[in-house]
Image (cartoon, helix red, strand yellow):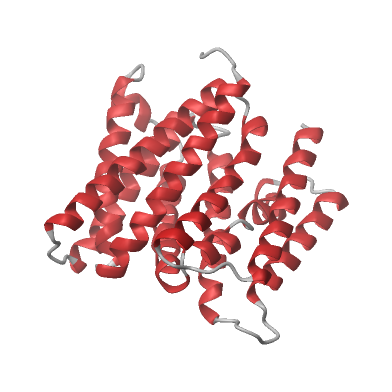
Amino acid sequence: MAQQNTSLGIWLMVFTTLVFALQDGISRHLSAEYNVYMVVMIRYWFFAAFVMAVAGRQAGGLRAAAATSQPLLQIFRGVLLVAEIWVMVTAFVLLGLTESHAVFTAYPLLVAALSGPILGEKVGWRRWTAIGVGFIGVIIILQPSGGVFSPYAVVPLVAALMFALYGLLTRYVARKDSAATSFFWTGISGGITATLVGAWFWEPMTGADWGWMGLLCITGALGHFTLIKCYEVAEASAVQPFAYLQLVFAAALGMTVFGETLRPNVAIGACIIVAAGLFTLWRARVRG
C-alpha cells in the first residue's frame, strides 16, 4: 500500500480535474464534427486497452481482475457509464462546457439522495436540507419560469443522474468485488458496448482530427491513472472537494476556446450547488 500523503493527493486531484476538463473540451470539438457514438467508441478502445494493461500488472493478472460473483451488475455498470458519456458529450455540443458542467455538478447531491433507497444508508435532515438547497441552484441555472431556459439544459441533468447511479452501483458491488475488478469490468463491458453501437456510425476523419482523437485517448488514460494514484496516497474524503475544480477548468476552457459566456444565473446556481455538495461531503465525513 502506498504511503499516505494528503498534500500530494490534493495536487493529483487538481491535475486530474484539469486533464478531464481538457478531455471534455476535445470531446466537444470532435463530437461537433463527427458522430458522438464513433468518438466515444474510439476513446473506449484505448481505455479498454489501458484497463487490461493495468489488470495484467496486478497479482493474478486478467483472470483475477475478471473474477466476480455479480457479473450482470458489473456489466450493467459499464454499459451505464458509456451511456452517461454519450449523453454528457451530447450536452457539450448542445449547451457548451460551462453550462453542462454547472448542471452536472449536482451529481453528488443525487448520490446522497439515492443512497438511502439503493444502498440502505441513512440520510439525515441536514443532508436532505443541503440536497434541497442544491436543487434550488439547479432550478436557478435552468430558469424554468422563463428567461433563456432551453430544454437542452435537461440533458446534463440526465447525465448527472446516470453518473450518480453508476457511482452508487460501484459502491454496491464493492461489497463483494475489489476496485481492480470493478475497473476491469468498467473498461471491458464499456468498450464492447461502445463498439456495438459506434461501429454503425463510422465516419472518415481528417488527419488533424485523428491527432485530436489520439490526444483524447491519452488524456482519458492519463486522467484515470492519476485518479487511481490520487486515491492510493490520500483518503477520498480529503481530496473529493477538489474535484469541483473541473467545473472551473471546463468553464475557463469553454469561454477562452469556444467563446462561451457565463450567465449570472449559471454562476450563482453553480456556486449554490457546489456549496451544498461540499456540505454533504463534510457531513458524510463527520458521520464516517
